[in-house]
Length: 84
Image 1 (cartoon, rainbow, N blue to C red):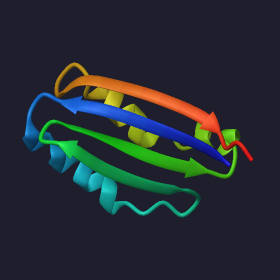
Image 2 (image 1 turned 90 degrees about the vertical axis):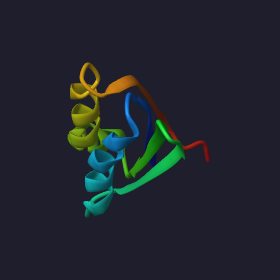
Image 3 (image 1 turned 30 degrees about the horizontal axis):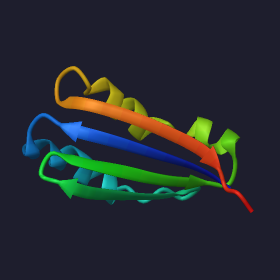
Image 4 (image 1 turned 180 degrees about the vertical axis):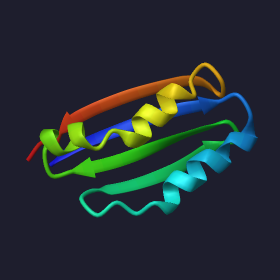
């Protein structure tokens, strides 16, 4: 199992509508959960069956990084493999 956590800080709380759209898309091949930790901060947890699958599913990551200059004050990505 492989996981990705995307932490973000929004420049305005109104940008939660963008993440809300992403939260409503239910992926078939992996799991995604979006958490709001404050008015302007939150994180996304995605779990995949493998690192290869994670590399093929970067749509949300690309969207958030694309918004970095316009609406995101900070986007941080952490990835890793499950320790068994």
